[in-house]
Each structure stands twice: as structure tokens, then as C-alpha cells.
Image (cartoon, rainbow, N blue to C red; front, side):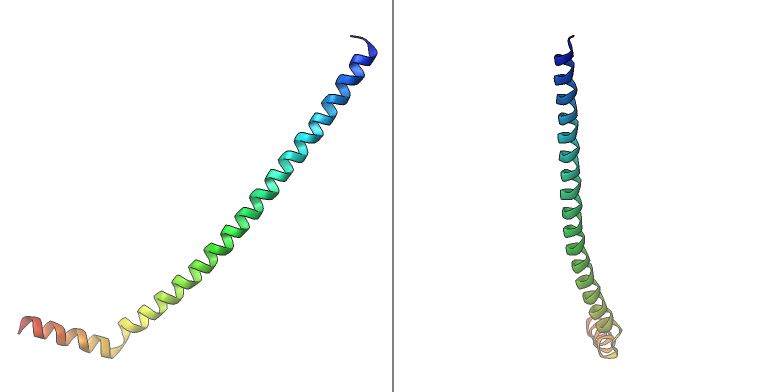
Length: 78
């Protein structure tokens, strides 16, 4: 292998390694942005579900709901 062939090969390998490094860095950035977007959406959905559960807990623990349920049970049995 002569000197110029070696210079061309070393340069090509160096450029190829740089391109691959940039490519993989870009893929990691894209993946992290996508993960952050999904995470925000999931957090918003989780908060909405927590609010719904809180409302359902209030309804179930309400005395009027309990009285209504007892009356319905009496009507079914009686």
C-alpha cells in the first residue's frame, strides 16, 4: 500500500466515524424529545384520572348516596 492510498483510507475512515457519531447523536436527541413529549401526555392523563377518582370517592362516601343505596336494597328485598 503506498502513502497516498493510506492517506485516503485514513481520511475516509475518519470522516465515516464522524458521520456515524453525528447520526447516532441525532437519533438519541430525537428519542429523548419523543420520550419527553409522551411523558408530558401521560402526566396530563394521569392527573385527569386522579381528579376523576377523587370525584368518584366523594360520590361514594356521600351520605345521600349511601341512603339511596340502602333504600334501593330495601325496595328490591321488600
